[in-house]
Length: 502
Image 1 (cartoon, rainbow, N blue to C red):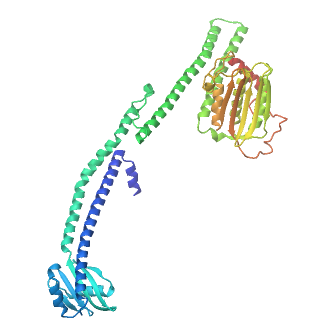
Image 2: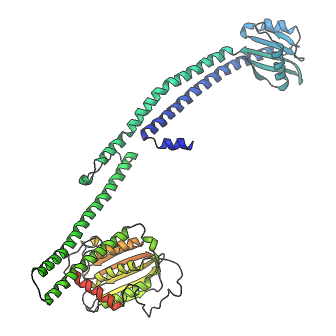
Image 3: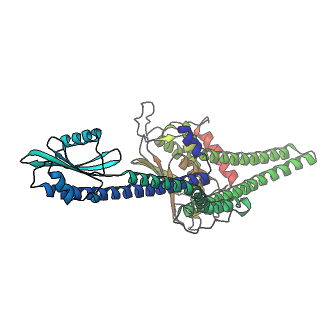
């Protein structure tokens, strides 16, 4: 049975609809025919029962004041004409025949069955034996059985008529079967026409006409819902295509500049013999260009990591408070030249799930921007607090701010707002936003021109008690768990990278 349903589910929708429509029509037709047959039969039998009952009551009324004896026969037969029915039988209290119509012979077998019905029923009852239908009325006088009146009629003709009717209905049902299948197939074909038309329009859309959309005749029906969902899918795909094309264009542009510079430097070095100082300058320029390309490729890898589905497999509980304290130290050293003060308000020992290196990357990217766009002697605030069930991180600066036109786009890849500050890669904030999302967090930004920018980042709080080895003192900041010998070495590397991007 399971295999049958499994095979049925693999059939084309048109065939399945045809089968369901046919079965539905057949069920309705069969129900109609059966109902007609049963109602007609019951009405006719009920009419016969009413006639038998009326005839029997008339005989009972006739015999009400008479003793049932052989003399009763003449009275019954003279008063009640035999033509009214096929059978009349009057029995005494010993179940002996007192009066009987001559049109219906009574044999001993039938008389025994009728006598059994009399003994088992003290109330009037209908009895069907073979091809005959009887109505039996016991007669009582002071709770004593004095006799029985039985009237009956043959139902053989009725049974034959209903047998013919039943065969006729079955024949009509079978004759209708083929037209029902054909009608069901046509109806299924008509029902699927909008879907086929929709499929044709979907197949006509490719990368060259991705802006086309399918028509929606009725957005409230099922086909309209599919069309609407498909159009929304096309919107997302088109947006993704535009972003990917822009990404390819921007990456190509970003790689073109250092590659062109590297080629020029190498060509200059190969044209003739140069001094050691010139070769040193050429190698230094090549190092800057290769570093820029390596940073770009690293940024692309961060995007790929954030977009993957299995990054959470490597998540571990991380002390976000410690990470922000370390980032605050790095920021303070990076802002030394501009005399920028970093203020912190960090609630200790707050835990989140994630990768330490990626979490560091988030805050370094945001704070790098804060340093870049802050004025000399500016202030940066780093605040970490618990806002159940999240850890809330606020990074606020009093720099030049972000314009209203630029603010909605700052998380777009390679987007650079208009600013007098040195141009960056345009990837820092977009990478930060992607990594925040990968850690199931949210990032929001507000800004006012010439007043500063505020980033609010939230991560789900990991409520597991810290082990003694995980707890840290707020007075002593341990070194970063990065592959570097010392924080000043890390600072020097970040500062050099910042200068090269400018």
